[in-house]
Length: 63
Image 1 (cartoon, one colour):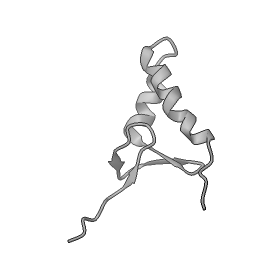
Image 2: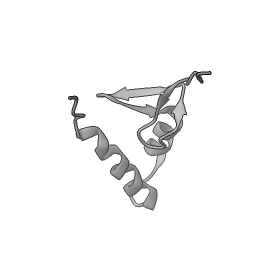
Image 3: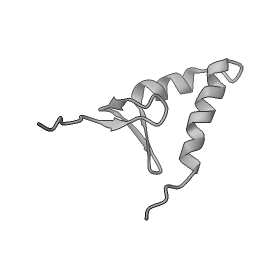
Image 4: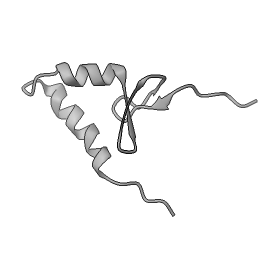
């Protein structure tokens, strides 16, 4: 039996979430978006978010 997946995979937390925003071809869930916006640049989590968001700049190769 097939399992129906609800939502999309977040580029930051890599979990399936039903709500969020699309940035180019990537999806960012509401929880990660809120956390990302509220994180100061001096927080170590900020570097983590930057590393995850770099995936967005790399275009997917379709063959």
